[in-house]
Length: 130
Image (cartoon, rainbow, N blue to C red; front, side, top):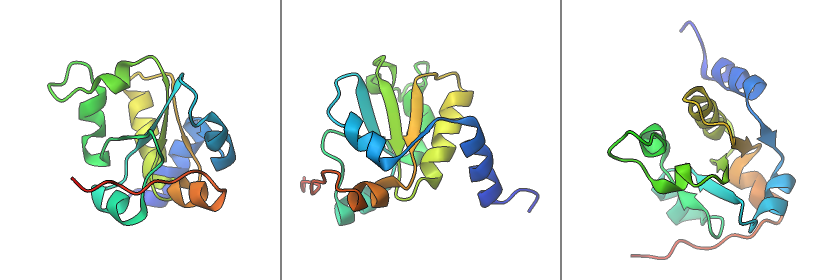
């Protein structure tokens, strides 16, 4: 491999805004913020989610964010500050960098992901079965 995942994540961290889990918890519930969970649906079913967060699977992130995509979701063009998270912060760092490279400006992620959120006492809810 020419570039490892670790190198990609380190590069992303050097180019994006990264919040701590504590900062993200303080912003939870702020109407000007939308927390976006990019974990796989099986992770949400197994571990729960942040109340009020929007689920956008990592594999669809660019398609849902792009207003010219037929898959666009309006949450990405809401004008709110978007805070991405995954389980540990790696996927969300890469996703944040990608969306930033696409031209999104009001975007960041938080370090440590859902694991850090839970560890720091952030609220968690179970995913309701459909």
